[in-house]
Length: 317
Image 1 (spheres, rainbow, N blue to C red):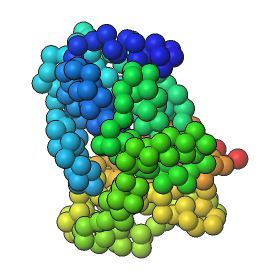
Image 2 (image 1 turned 180 degrees about the vertical axis):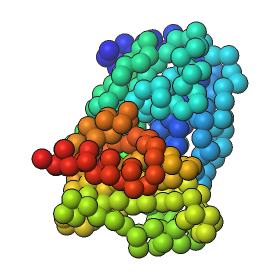
Image 3 (image 1 turned 90 degrees about the horizontal axis):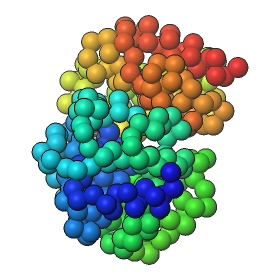
Image 4 (image 1 turned 45 degrees about the horizontal axis):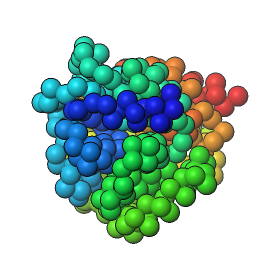
């Protein structure tokens, strides 16, 4: 549906539960936080919910502390932001399916299943670009705080405007956000440069053990539970680890394996462009973008690495 029709439907409701995907990143949080402020300005009661703990990186933004772990408001509607399907909601997925409410889905992933009653799915470098279009269609004037949340999502999902899917429209929107008070320098520091000592130690430990396969075209970054325990780091501190091996000339695909628990790994995939990692993730029930996708795999470390190596090899042909 068009963004105008989506906006019209959303404006008709009186209360909203905003859902972010599990293990939240800057794009889903930027989408949720800015939407909460937009709805506030329209007098629409709302709450923000995510099943996961918000990473320390984003707690710099006070509004993020209002994010709940489960719904409390008996809202008329649910809006999912930056979610390709209900599975990305984690434990909230079942609640979403059972809920007898108007369901909205605004997203930018190629793997989106159009799982809601009202779907606006537009492929672009960050869902916060779609949110900016939504606010324009809703007649909401962007505040400085909203501009910063949208810029946060755009910065994180575009790799600070370095990914190949960044187009002129993304830069024009970014320029408008800066004109409205977006703090590019401050956001860049908090999102990419600032880190706790525990993360630094984990990064040093993990990067010293990066593994390569397929004639060095595929790299594996492995984070085990023992790595977290010995460095005192948290799972959410691994954000961005998957990108580093792409700096190697020969590497076309980087894969980060985070051991969630024994024989269960959260997989993050990144590509320079020659390999569609959404196709790789889709083989295992996951999805995302052509350049950035993820999934969950079960088995021993070596079994998981073998399965991923084979899947990537099929896309490298």
